[in-house]
Length: 245
Image (cartoon, rainbow, N blue to C red; front, side, top):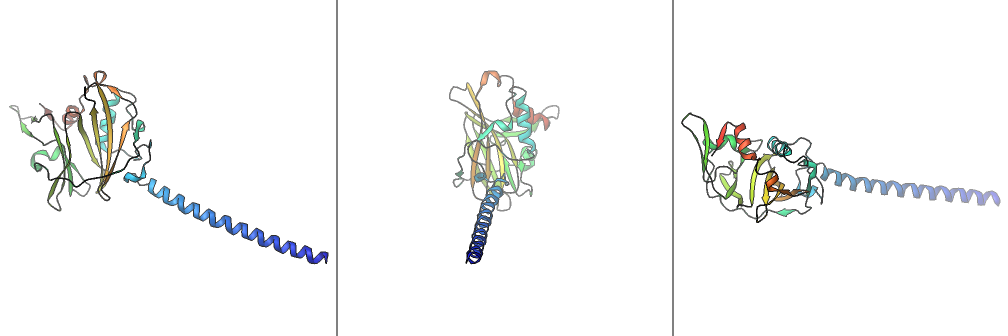
């Protein structure tokens, strides 16, 4: 009788152990699948939805114009670093874009236009009310412009030219880079109403799901401490051998 009870208890214990083992395995697989989905989203830095509040832009290699923008302003503010641009955690859907007021003259503005890797799309924030022409010495000069800025996104394959943004005096786009054929980043400068406070931002757009989100520098900059000596647009154009008037 004692042997029988011992055998029963041993058998019951094995069944219980097997149940616990299977349960842990199932839970582990479920958790792993959930983590895989989470990590999969996090591993694609072009998705607006991949970022939560206070995340930083997770691009392993910064595109050239954004990198130049950050490096330039670090001369005036050592904390002007990618790690200090924090995600708002807000993902917005892009509204239907209006037709742009003009069409980019690529024969003139190609050198300052940002093209997608397959060259079918472009971003142009320079050509609004401006022209590039040679001066009396044959050097290229960008003339014209005004207080407003139109940011154009064009799709050459579908022959469309849309207005991505129209900025007034308190906001200006200074850089544009494509990450792939459907996503891109913009570097922007915002100022408050008095123009005394300067707040840089990075915008991430994804045309595949028509969303965008923003990353804002985690500290404000007094404009008189940087803007008196800093002019990234003029600096960037000089790298293209174009003088800004």
